[in-house]
Length: 188
Image (cartoon, rainbow, N blue to C red):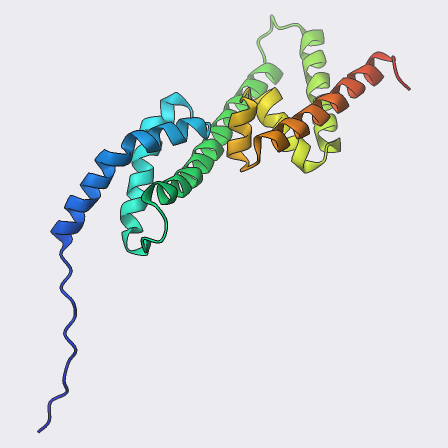
């Protein structure tokens, strides 16, 4: 009886991979940390985000074909992790703002109703202004003017050229100034 010839599978040396991974971690951890910080990841989230980059690297270890530099690949992973960290931060801030809004609307008896109404009116006006912006300008305006990110941080989060982000922010701020002037009755 003929037995089928089996191709011998190459032996995979997991220990060698672990040693190599550890060397990559030690060599590039500072680079990843700096990259994440420049991509706008808050200081409080940098350690977790750095570890997340290396978790992704480890999971995708077999995907790296060596055509690009390791730093290029790590930076690409860091951009994805930074986007996720930013989204997580935005969700948390929205939840906090929602709680604050609930507290204000259900506020204590001593809260000034006219102040509360004025705050709600301002929030509606701002939302109306934001809805009127083109999406590209709105994203940069929200990140810089509302969330407090710098232009380089916003550009990194949105994967934009720094000059493009600055131009979009300048145009959105011009439109906001015009919007405020119309509210004040200075412009028709």
